[in-house]
Image (cartoon, rainbow, N blue to C red; front, side, top):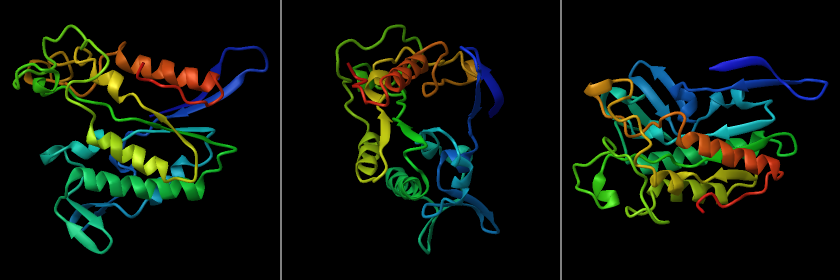
Length: 235
């Protein structure tokens, strides 16, 4: 989705603002998704589509959600790493490889003096009540209160360590919007049976609006106002 030529009301002269959001799988997965005779191939070592990210004053990257899809919801038929083709692989390993390719692209193509780069952290799901000391069959459905306390009973998500590990090895400064833990506490924040599929579904991965993502935006705004200095989002 692109919102071209949006003008922001402020003191003259007005600011011309172009906002673009890319939700197609080949961009959200970062790695190239190529259709070949064999099928749709997710190439973990390739990121030719990165050209569409050039020329912006600010880039906010977000992924992982699409790496979890299975069956017909999966965006690829095969995963390729180097010369080897896999029907599938451990998603954390694939995510780590794809993220390392993305990090190399950023280091090679982004000028930090012109473009600020942020990575939005992992957005959690709430399909397993055992993670917050409820019964295993419990989901976000019928949940009306956040989890109390300052730590999530189910512990940190492994994907968070992958993101932090890749970012720590980059030469380009990338601000991490570490929204995971604070979002883990909001088991009550999902559409559940009131999502797109209604009673036929139970959406415990997306978020209600207004809701949790508005908090993420407030933290981003605070970071920008502070001149890009990082703040602890979990307290």
